[in-house]
Structure formats: C-alpha cells, structure tokens
Image (cartoon, rainbow, N blue to C red):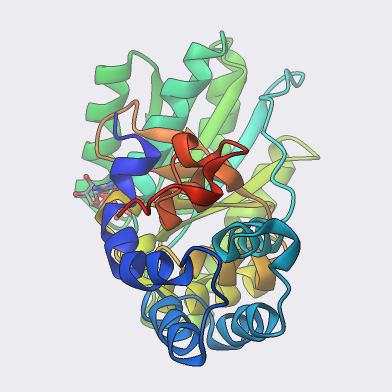
Length: 313
Ligand code: GDP
C-alpha cells in the first residue's frame, strides 16, 4: 500500500518550491514568495478564495508565534479540513447498509470492494450488491472482487431494475447472515434528472426493506479531476444527502488541494482515501497526515526544534 507521503508526491511536487521558499531562516516571507505560494496552491486545486485567505494571513504575520511560516500554513490547512472522526463500523441489527454513489469511472466499484475488505478485517460479514444494472462490466467486476475478497455478492441482471436489485441485495444480506451491505449504484452523468430519479428510487427501495436504510450514503470522488469532482459532489449532494466522501485515486493526482474545497464546502466528513488499486489501498482520512505529506513536512521536521533545520524538498 502507498503511504500518504508517496501517494501525494505529485501534489507535493507542485507545491515544493513555494513551500520551501516560505521558510528562510529568521526572515519574513516577502510579497513575491507569498504570491508564488498562492499561485501554487491554486495550481494544486486549493479553491482560490481559500488560497488568498492563507496568503493574507501569512502576510499580516499570522505565523510569527510559530517562528516558521510553514507551521502556520500547516495549521491553517488542517483546521480547514475540520473534524473527520473515524467511522467505527457500528454493529447494526440486522444489517448496516452503506450506499455508494459517484460517477462512472470515479472508482466506485473498486472502492466498494476495498470497503468490503475493510469490513471483513473489522470482523464483519459484508455483502456486495451491484445495483448498477446498466453496465454488465460493472457487475462482473464486482463479482470478481467478491471472489477475490471472499464475500457474498448479489448482482442484478443487466437491464433489470436497479432499485429492485438493491432491495434484493439487502434482503439477501439478512438471509445469508451478513451484517453489512455495500450497495454499488449507477453513475451516468449525461443528464441530471434520470440519475436523480434512479438514486432516489434505490434509496426508497432500501428503506422499504429496512426502515432506516441506507444508514450511510458515501460519494466516491476521482481525485484526479480536482475541482470538477467538487462540482459533481455538489450535484449529488442535492440528489441524495451524503454522509461522507471517499477520495479515490489520490495516488495519481496532482490536484490534492481540491480536498480542502470538499471539506469546506460540502460539510460532510471525508471518510477514506484511495491510494492504489489493490484491496488494501484504502486509508482512513487523517487531516494531519494529509497536510504533512502535501507540504513535505515529514515527522522528522515536525519536532519542536525544526525551525533551524534546512528545508526538505
Ligand atoms: P467505477 O466506474 O466508478 O465503478 O470505477 P472503477 O472502480 O471501475 O475504477 C475505475 C479505474 O480506477 C479502475 O482502473 C480502478 O483500478 C482505478 N482506481 C480505483 N480506485 C483507485 C485508486 O485509489 N487509485 C488508483 N491509482 N486507481 C484507482
């Protein structure tokens, strides 16, 4: 599995020069340095207004108590991400139902499999439900994943009703003694209305089977899309009330800064990040680890005496 540090190398490279210039022993960052920092943050897909706010804070000396402007930038970035309490995989009777949404290609199916794998490691018995009945390939892929992980799966026939398949999957989870149902859904983005209709139908259908289901609705976002992923998240959040976001493909992205936009705008916790294509490549979102890897501030320079150390690129 990729470490945070490895996974964020592209975005870090984007920011490296600006961040290292920010720290010149004993010197206040000059206007040019701060301008470069702001531009680099925007290139890494930090929302422009936020980047301007960070710059203004550093400009007016918000960092002085810390002796190192990077330290101030770090805490500004971390506080923007807010609280992301870990999901503790509650044991729900009879079944914990998690609905996964997102556009096709975002990494939904892979993420469903990673989540099932994680649930197994928590001692739960997961079932994967393929409620994307439009794409035969999607269902086949989920079945292959279920074999690989060793978990139950329910796949609807291609062209059959997605909401009915979701209902059947939840019923099967109960019947087969599974205590987590992870429901993969369709994500065609061509037009908003049919998607809205279908996701709403799936949701109602799950609730018919189990009154409080789905207990969680998580959206998978493709981190390589940066701000465009944020636009998609806004749309989905209107359609179904999201209770969490999962950022897939963070390992392949140079636009990790969009995470700040997601956290600030959506107000939903970022649950996990995808750091690769394997079943174990799903990490609990950790705001400090994320920011440290982004800024290149490894644990070694995060010691109390780091202020006089040379920069790390
Ligand atoms: P879906 O259409 O939304 O179900 O997307 P898929 O799960 O089929 O994923 C699309 C592609 O992205 C596949 O090639 C996956 O292997 C790849 N993928 C998914 N998650 C990650 C991730 O976290 N990192 C990387 N590098 N690739 C990923």
